Image (cartoon, rainbow, N blue to C red; front, side, top):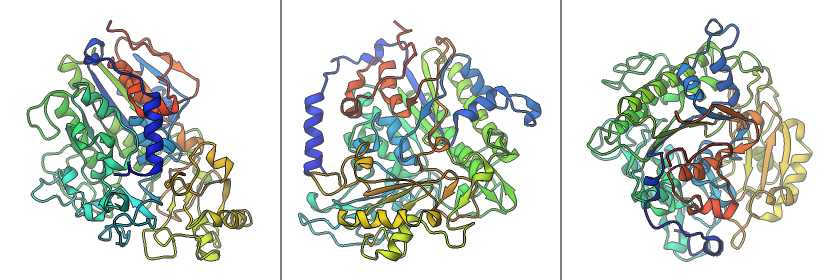
Length: 575
């Protein structure tokens, strides 16, 4: 929907210049790999996989506590230096994995971000992004973008409020297009999630090559994985809303044996599945069951289909186990070496049990030899060291987030929809602060203000000007990039800007614990080995295409950024 802007025209020209022709036949049928199962265990660090595979003193009697993941590792390539996107939020983290691109190219910075070329939605979103005017073909005002539960028709329902939908299955029909930002250059058309992505994805490439594609995730908005090729390239999508009210799930039992026919944890805050160590496992099991159906050659809800060429899901349970404080029960870690608490241990074991179910089903179906299984994470979580957590404002009575500081002292510098002191959804701050200003001319004053208040804001690094544009496009209206923040602030390790007393960790930032995640590629034909060189999760996308016998340069991100296939893995074992 934004193809008419100069920036998109520039990107399109670059793509045309760099384009490499793909072979004319369905090359994926020539490879030994027929199926790719892609799993994100959100929050799963490389050290978590190391610890659970080998065992840790004082946990599970010192025995390994992820036997199914450990078994995959015996025929797997384990990349211990894998890094996620920066920022390390779920939305850019996921889209990096499926596009082979970084935020500068794919244009995804956070599920709640900002775009200077768009106007606001026709109606206020469920999370309070206010309705705003839009005049076709007029100059845009710029507005906060939102691609999570706030754009559901009814975010309190697991099915997102889609008319006539089953209890958990609204899919893209639950997206309320009146809650989407609008593009004045396109007649004020709403910008659908898949149209917000600038670069194509593995789902589009594989579908066009004759493959069958499927994905399950935590919001209907994450149908964005289809990319600009359109929702039609995603043959099967399942997106039960994670931030809906917790309800009983008749007939659902977790891999660890919890019955979800009644709500397991009724003492928890039932306004979201993420508020409970037990309830989150029931939610994740919805997606696990979708994968089990797809392995059997069905759609996520059991209709006749075929086993997808590419399919997968995200687990949320480990992320919840890492950061939640539920009443007096704490998740997270016991020390800086990553020793899990009992509650985090149970979440890792749950995810491992569920993956074990998938692997067993794959073997039963005779698909194990021709399935590439990839286990990684959209993001990590920081800090692992429980003594390092500092919620600002929180422990320091005068603590301020960077956005609040700027809003308090430079009143006109923050766009109304980004202003934390305003009535809108506010600024994008977790253990990172992404700052979009009303005009680039405010940047110098804002940076001076931040530099003068490092103690109050817990600032670690400030990126602006050349230090920002080295890794991101120059911010501004086209021909500059309307989505690039003017300033990015990464705090000292452990500092978060949520001010939450109900969390132990957060993600979004650039720290090692935020970005260093598990990355394992497994197939029975692989020789087990550990790769210590640094790699990125953006390399997963071209690796998947190469494994299926498709051309990695079919991906826009690969051509524009030179993204390489992951090293030291034999993808030609079927020839």
